[in-house]
Length: 213
Image 1 (cartoon, rainbow, N blue to C red):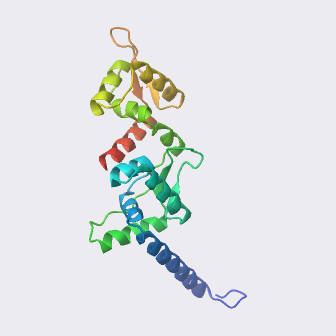
Image 2 (cartoon, helix red, strand yellow; image 1 turned 60 degrees about the vertical axis):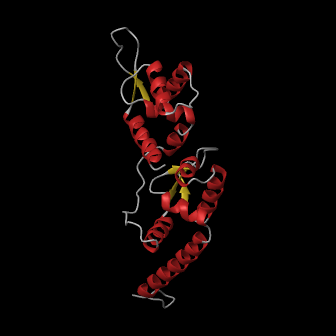
Image 3 (cartoon, rainbow, N blue to C red; image 1 turned 90 degrees about the horizontal axis):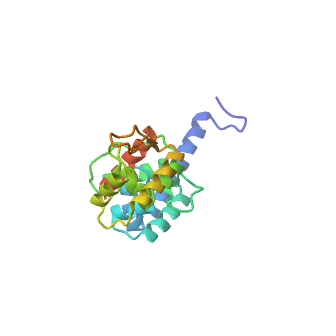
């Protein structure tokens, strides 16, 4: 089969494949021109914010934010919550995944399955990625009252400055966004709070991102 221009389908596909190879090769050369970009690419095995990337790579947050914006323009990564003014969440595009695979092979690192994007409201996830909000979500391992949530959060991070009223305010916001629900009152009549299924999914991702650090 041939197009009116005389180019066969096979020839067109070969040309497209060649163009993609040339583009990927150019992106890879640009990527390895900066050790910072290489470290960021290697660590992105799941969606991450600049803060999470900084903790993983021991780079400063501003440098990570700048590098991620540059990588997004080169279509190495994509921003999953483009409307956010802060706590933007980034993930590898297909070009980025291929670059990551090549980097791992050249550095003789263990092979991994190219990461896939979990189904989630990324605007909501980015909203949670603030200090008090993420601390509250990570502390909610079981139905708990606000003082217990605060204690658990402080045990996890002794430097965290958060009051019980801060926890209550955060819980109200999270209830409105479908992350938290009120549980049955305890024997003493105090209402406890628990994560919804969406809240548990967000909690799992937050803990995984922290485990990378």
